[in-house]
Image (tube, rainbow, N blue to C red; front, side, top):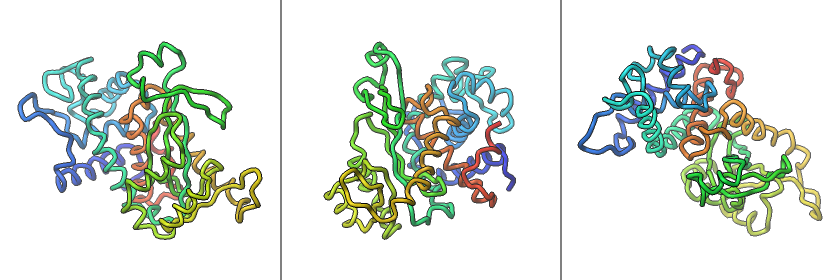
Amino acid sequence: MTNDLDTLATALYARIDDELKASPWLAPARPAVGIAATLSDAELLTLAVTSALLGYSSERRWLRRAGRDFRHLFPCMPGQSGQSGQSGQSGQSGQSGHNKRLRAASALLTHMIRILATATTLWSDDVWVVDSTPVGCGCSRETAKRSDLAGWAQYGYCASHSRYFWGLRLHLVCTLGGLPVLFAVTDAKADERETLRDMLDTAPDVVASHPSQTIIGDKNYYGREFEHDFAERHLKLLRPTRKGEPERAGAHLFKPLRQVIESINQTFKGQFDLERHGGKSPAGVIVRILALTAAIWHNDKTDQPVKRSLIAYDY
């Protein structure tokens, strides 16, 4: 396999298609009676990942670009020349149908993240890093009132940038090689410790397959009860020393290792435009996590020296 966008898209499509054939119940539910989709679920996910890798936050602009330059990969392009994700739709309605199908495919997107992640050599890493990052969803009071996210998104504080924001938080557990292992999208004020517990509770198979795993977090992951809970899960928690605490072993090693997850968060915000329009829904966030996982998976399969490099896929 070569290391370019076309090859990644082809390999990803084949992997998703094989998974859907083996487990057809993973496919999003579709009405028994109605217009048949011409764009398959495997093509839908591959198209979304390709858009994220190329940094498109506008779906309309992306569909125009894809119809011009990627017709050889996606012959049934939504909203192009009378073709769409569903027969008989075109233009803006095709774009709308494409967006609705992608939102309905959130469970399949999440499943494919795990499938690709476990197929890499990075999955066996014995050290994970955990952190959360703000996902700003609006800057005006009117947006906070009228947005579809109203009631879920909240005002929160970002200590790293000393600013308040209105939106959500992405909580991410990843390997030191940058491979996403667990993730959650919460309101801006959600407790990071409770969210991490919930992520571990909802993925007992992941924890069971990584006994005695080490997890590195920042100063917010603290507390005697919290650390006791980790010990009962046979997990080791490492974090910097908080004010008033005695010096913790290995504290001098945390700063360079924590730069890994800071770099990953920046990839989501810089390369994948996480805080722009495309990342303001759960499906938009999940697509970006799948895009990073797919790039690492493909780099791993093609024996690239830097598994998290996106240079071959961003143009």
